[in-house]
Length: 146
Length: 484
Image (tube, rainbow over all chains, first blue to last red; front, top):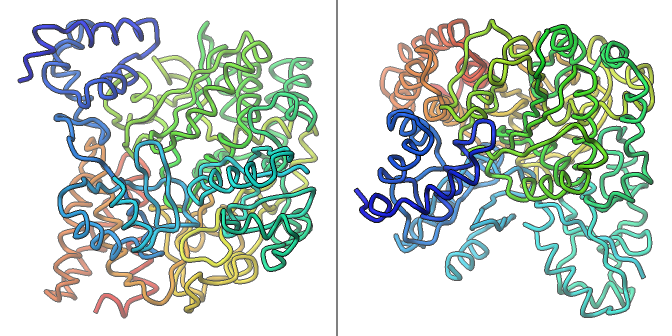
């Protein structure tokens, strides 16, 4: 368990207070916690549950349901490569295999199911930036720049 | 000189910002305007200079274009291009022409006319107009929008909601994204009209987190148009990477801050929806069609289409297709026209083997079915669905057993877990197809997969488990040679 949020939950509590006026505030809170702390870990769940008067089980249930929320921070750079049908039809599967080998564990290559750029795949998302028409040279350049 | 370049996410992904920077440096006196995308994706980044289009442009082409030497990139007047000229653009009337966040551009192109018309009408009249237009839910289910609105209007409750489903998770679809990024006021106007129609003052747009550009544009547009739509108030909520949240009851749970599990119906969301209140849940395209209906009248919209599918459908040409993009047209166009005539066949140049229509839960269609007209009922009769209007083309290199396995795996990963047929059926389906692909017990395995599909189709709570059999069974039926 991370000790920093437990001993000083003020950062998480500030986020909760920022959203407290909303109807159904939990998802916006979880997004902001993850943006600020890189993950939503046990100590964050404990602080959120306490602040919203929910059980830890309820908050844990929500956090674990959604693919976006991480239990631990990812220290490596993240490249999300689309693996859905439209990108499959344009060769994303062999490209993904090649990218894994190329990145060699230095970069986290994660699958994403559709970026809505389905006519110009294979596509990738790095941070908030989108990249299309990826082949080995183009994707290789992105991996090297990370 | 006036240079128009899109700032849509797809154009950006193809390098539109680099092209815009190159023009700004090479032609410092030119006015560079960032507009929405025309939806001719194979030509992105598409650049329009004093009415003439060039594409696809890279930053290296800029000097040649400015010197008038880029004849091979020149496509002439964009509106005369056959891909655009053949369309009927009602929802996408502004695509490529206006600055997405410019209130002046919106107003000058007929914006807010629908809302003004609605404000002069009684709620019942608005609902009647939408019902008479024949507009059906564009999210996939095709439920008549007017009937849904009527139920919410008739539900007695001091607080009601308009929820826009912008969780466009289907692979092969991007029309919602293009509306949100390219014409956000149109969606906001549609929601405000829905609010007047049913007596709701609060709207939520639930956008998937994979669409950061759409989220940013909507948030900016909501701030800029706040006074215009007041007292109606709109708020954007970001999803968190769960495909099943595109199902309306799961979406409502997610908005409430719960696990995105599907709710049993009844009660319908129209009676007991968000926070237990009467709620209209409509897709982006449904709500964005509403301003046209109110501004031009129900009949103007209903004049397009065939049978019980009225109006236009923004069809999305995707996957391995030569001329991919957004094609809005009246219902009734055939699959073959879309793929061969308009789409130009595959991008790889190899023969088309299959087209998946309607997203990950839609059927795979072989070329023998390409005479099917785009129509809710015709596709249902052919054991398929048009869903959200996405069309993904595959060439002859596709292995349909692998695609069937992927459909099961996707369902297993994305299942909310609430009902057994979906949660367990998809897991067993994937395992069985793995064995089958490995060459073990092919005959028994296939029978088991078909039986699992039967159980999922009739026993699942929502479309995720209920429709996953469409891609699986269509692959088995139309491409049996891949399962031997």
